[in-house]
Length: 253
Ligand SMILES: *[C@@H]1O[C@H](CO)[C@@H](O)[C@H](O)[C@H]1NC(C)=O
Ligand SMILES: *[C@@H]1O[C@H](CO)[C@@H](O)[C@H](O)[C@H]1NC(C)=O
Image (cartoon, rainbow, N blue to C red):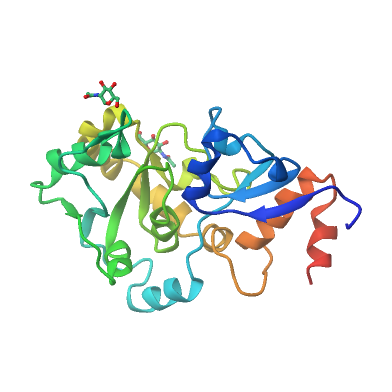
């Protein structure tokens, strides 16, 4: 390995991404970057070999929540979102936070009893996710957020509202089977779209979502396990390096 002109770096923070708007720093050009950021269109933050990875959620926290709120238990919240929501979004250099998507959700649905929307932090939010049928995952400054992985890990159907988002491990996780995607321009129609799914294919989506391999694929364990997030990162790297994933996996054991 030492002869390869290659560094592999895990960069998970958006500050790096903003810095990269001046271009990828020279020292990173020969790297493969592991990053949570991913979009399907050209963007300076991915102008380098990269693998999109899920944000890190401690598996123990998920386990603890699931012990109290089992996957198939009662879900008494219909649509959930907790997070920053600008009521009057400021125009910063021509950009609005979350492209105003969160503002539209708040204005349109905060008075709707089916929607449980909260704007302030709460340490027990994982239990809210575990009690919810649909978990809204609208873009913020970045298209992704940790709530996407938490929703999946806790069995709440993620409703992804982030046009052009590139999701992690597309060959391992069949995203269209376990989540819903709503176009940013359709966000004002969210209630009707969710109603439609609830009346048609919700239980099929939940069945796919609750399969253990889905949860496993998005969580990083302390010690790598076959089919977990670390394992999928190694497989993706192996593919880029033209090796069999078996070689990489064995070298990690
Ligand atoms: C937002 O700000 C940019 C420049 O900072 C300006 O060109 C644009 O017109 C502003 N948009 C609105 C809706 O005020
Ligand atoms: C469920 O229905 C929605 C809305 O019709 C559709 O977009 C989605 O692909 C369906 N998902 C599955 C897994 O059948």
